[in-house]
Length: 167
Image (cartoon, rainbow, N blue to C red; front, side):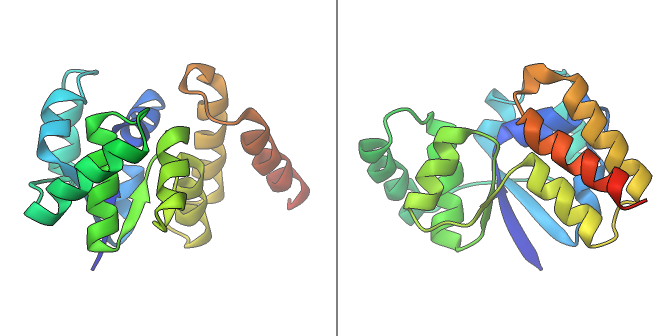
């Protein structure tokens, strides 16, 4: 079973387009520090409950991850405590980090942690045949429509253009 350490913003992205169930089609377990679930995923109000019903698992950190979080704080001052914990979990458990946060992404790369964002996750779902072309296109258009989520517009448009060319 593949485990993926998750940051909050991915779930907010999928929630914005009413598609939080889609990532759970991958044969993996998404994990998130339980305190981040309780304190960071605040809107919409029922998002945490919905995510946990779908399979998101709140986890505690061990001593190694705890100390790693403090080491990361010294190196990456712009990261929130929950970002550092998500990175520490991914690093110490040697698993993928799922985030759309640019500063966290850069820190993960510097730490040698594999990282994937919202668009990469959507691509993987499509490439593995876990979502159909129509659903993939709908998600891309939904993300484009919600520019407040700050996903790279050019990346979304490039994928939509590739779909047009593949007809």
